[in-house]
Length: 357
Ligand code: ATP
Image (tube, rainbow, N blue to C red; front, side):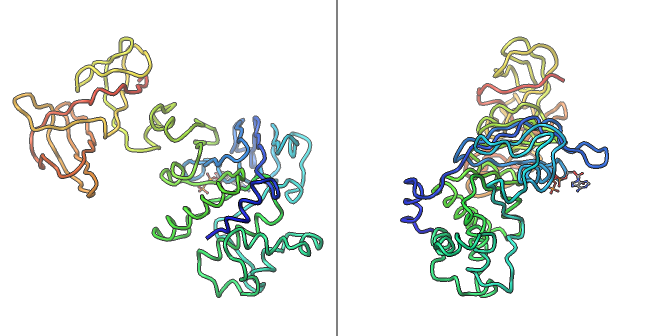
């Protein structure tokens, strides 16, 4: 566990706190193929941002551009008010005050824990107790002489984190930091790392393609799609008010029900549904599974149950409406309907986002 006294000392100003990171209109191409299209985002000091998107959308490239491992074609990257890259300038990675943790958290196997942590430090910093302080910070005080292979997977990751933090970076970048861990360890390690980052107040940006991970760890989530930043907001904003139907489907289970909008309501197969934004004409109304209610039909059925998935804390009822629309409806506790049963599905009355068709 992290040493809270060291953490407290650091957040009292004896150590470092996170700096602001600004990315402005950054573009990047490889051999004529544009991988980043004018990406702009601003990360506040101490904020943790998740960079979320499907494989190949440019997440790692953006991280590498920020770190200085790739040159940007245009735009700028600013760390704590200092431009570290723009269309002309390209500061070397080691001068940017940016720490980086890679997917495999790779340690040098032939170096001791202390030598791994001290690897990127100059002689003065190594002699000033920075290595011990960094190990203390991640809860590994006294393990400096050990070799990496003698530590557990979780401990090795904390050594990698100590190594990234030892030069006191303003911003920490993490590329898919938990993807190599199996489920149980992943949840534990990410909770530990999250606590450490928030206690330290460090500015962090991490790449993931896992929506749950992005929501659990990110103060804000930047969703990328085909090299573009599609939306940047809190997990609740993305879930409740997605900027596009694509985002709605990417961040959680989404039902789309075709309807005709007139102002702040739309007529659908589920009846009239309140909309979060006014619209007119043909729309797809987004209704999350937890906003649908399913009850046994009493002469007013509009669908049939095709399957029930029971999860313990809740269950998902799959329903086909008579017009062919397939719905997923989440309900708490035990199912009160069964497969093949005729049911009535309606909205719980929550206002829903809609998208013009
Ligand atoms: P993943 O989640 O699979 O890691 P990603 O969102 O991180 O994907 P990137 O690794 O940034 O995506 O890759 C984006 C696109 O840029 C891909 O089409 C990739 O093939 C291409 N690309 C990345 N690096 C290079 C390179 N050095 N040279 C040529 N193309 C590259």
